[in-house]
Image 1 (cartoon, rainbow, N blue to C red):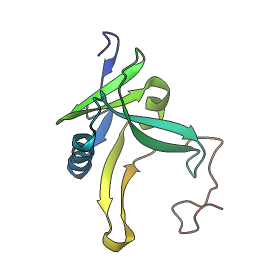
Image 2 (cartoon, rainbow, N blue to C red):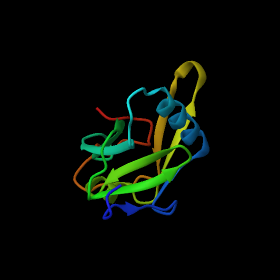
Image 3 (spheres, rainbow, N blue to C red):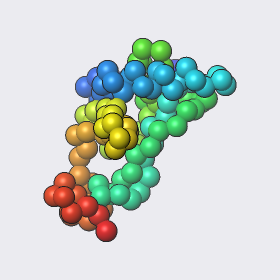
Image 4 (tube, one colour):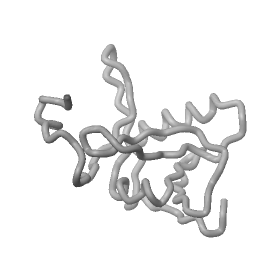
Amino acid sequence: MSATANTLSNEDLTVTAPAQTKLSELVNQVEDPIEGIRVYATPGGCSGINFGMSFTDQVNENDNILECEGFKVIVDVGTMQYLRGVEIDFVDRGEEGASFVFNNLQPVSGGGCGTCGSGGGCG
């Protein structure tokens, strides 16, 4: 890890126990060495931002690191501004499928469709 990388606390970003369990399972399935799981943001979606996760073999100077049991969550400074106070959870809805969800997202001005959370969806 770079000496200038910032260590995150659970106040900055939280990964729930179910999410940590699933992420740990996924990390253990990777054959190539990795540094951790990178969480990133891209423009779009109802909040104005879409979030994703991928394996990474690199930690950059401007990255923030959340140490979890058996893996690291790595977030760059630009993405961290949207994730401060967010909880990453893993929800298994049986036949409907399972997914990671980002709870407590703050609204981003200038994006979105205004109907999310009201049952209307985007579109």
